[in-house]
Image (cartoon, one colour):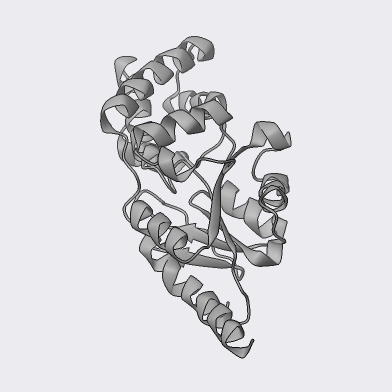
Length: 232
């Protein structure tokens, strides 16, 4: 990092910028409890690592030893999750402070998610972060036609923002998202929240316990940029 000038930070959305993973787990527990399944938050944390909700519901049914109409189950899950999001969705701790610092230091940033564009806009609005992501800073896998853990979305973001991968860092919380960053060949940070049961162990991944810690790494880049400016 000392020899790199970082010009752009690419963020995942859910579980990285907004505290949605916790609410997603709670919704899953409630839906299966309604079916008489003694599912706990601890059970979900052991098996919930991102991905398509239909796949998660199928896997959870198998774990619980029940059969259910997945389409109906998904509908009920989304109803429960929408209710939780409307009342409880918040930014991840440190997210607002970090975004303010990036703006202050003229470091560009954007968000990249497997979710549809409209869903990200709605979630960022509910979490109070919409004002930070105007002007083409939101990128969906549906636009790139490629979903994490494939690396294309990360590469697409860098290209669309006008930077090389060497100018960027990528921040995600899930193993699949981190894999996308690694495969894209970009410096990758994993936000290791208390909900994360299986952090990625990889030589090219830097662990963060809190979003505020990212600036400590980016300060190396800022020092390099300031030194170059003084030489001119």
